[in-house]
Length: 440
Image 1: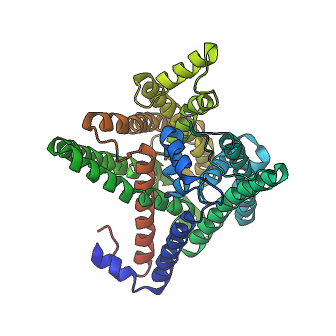
Image 2: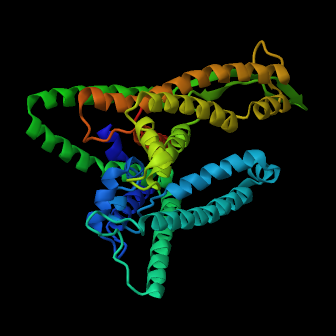
Image 3: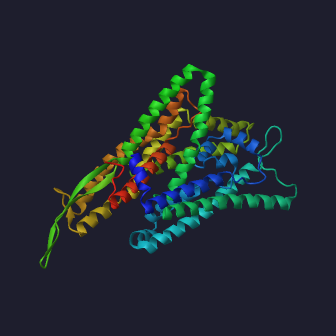
């Protein structure tokens, strides 16, 4: 594999694209350390340790959230905008027609809609973040922001913070699109990949520092933790790469003296059609109650106090009810998103239009029913597998008592998925130039 990797650098086109990816990573790392001025990082990090939601968002920023950098919100608004646009193309006929029949111009227009929506979402998210943090005070009276005393100057300062955070997200969106055009693979996915990988050295350092304090018993748990993690990664690879190939036969057509068609092919139905989207949807919903509880004062009494205690007790990642509900939400969104991404009726109609049929199945409605039956069975396996992957890290950390290495199902799926996709794209470019690929 290393020999093949070195061979890829001998091809100028692939080498230039890989260098673009490396340059994008370097720029991303630099942006992590461009802090928003006027932020008390000591108070901010104390607040981060209290919020599970912040830990989840921080996984994708590579430490920018901990530094309160201009890229603290990461690329999350762009992901949300892309998901929203995908859902809107299903319910709005004009957008669906633009996606299906618009060609390159239609894709560019949809891309413009996504970028515009990203800016709107990033401004809204930055505004909500600033409004939520500006009144936070420690018991000693310190705040997250060291704001000016003048009312107008305060307004200007908070406006500049909101614009800086939104501009950071817009910059990452531009950088990701540039990496997509000039590099290999999806640039936005590569930035998320880089954000997750950048946190690994901190996790490893904290883990071994704690291991030196606790002794041999902790090392045993750490070995078990690493072994189970490797098995989990193997399962994710199998789930990501798995597909059901439905055979398709195209009838022969005689036009003049030429014979067209007659070949056999297949429809590849991926096992995991939903990807990581179902887990992102589910975890976003699961963190809504915790976010709501943060707005309730810490020493609230009466109904609000009871509500805050109930939410913090039940909607805790270590609670069984939380994980059971999380599992069910992942299964639901897996079915929901698979139905959106794989349009059975369109596939069946296109097969019938071009003279294709599944052996033993009549074209048209019987084909659609047959494909729906296959998809429902595959989606069941995918939903249960993703649900188990989603809740597994919580119990792995509880059993092994290794809690300094934040293992997230979302981060594992993204890292494995991006690595496999990039490897396959390099493989395809190598094969095009008659080089041996990674996979023999």
